[in-house]
Image (cartoon, rainbow, N blue to C red):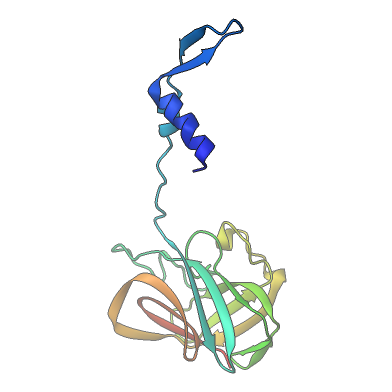
Length: 192
């Protein structure tokens, strides 16, 4: 806080203001209780699915930045229910997950030009999942605003299912590229 602001706050907290009139006489006036109003700031509500940002290097020293909302399982049935099969999923919660990098990369063997992209997937009950990089990266409501005509690249990735369950979704930049983990899912997206 600046020094002048601190002085104003001290005066307001004191509850009165002294000043001198035109004739030099000292006058004191009560100041309205504005401090109480200033302290009544609405509490910041924590997001149910915290916003996460990760950065890492893969392949030939390619730096990737990823931002996503990290939902938790909370005892829910995920695959085929909360996250339907054969439908576009924002691969996270709230706004669209996005990936950013400053050099062209290979994703599952296909070229993806440098840029910033939203990341979507299409989960399947069995077999490979579709991974989508879409040019519309700043979507505040994820898959509800998704438009297929803005897809820049679609590839397929093979999920694996593990015994140990992970409560909160995580997206990491690690070998072999981008790795999505949630509940018992591990979805590696190969970047080389």
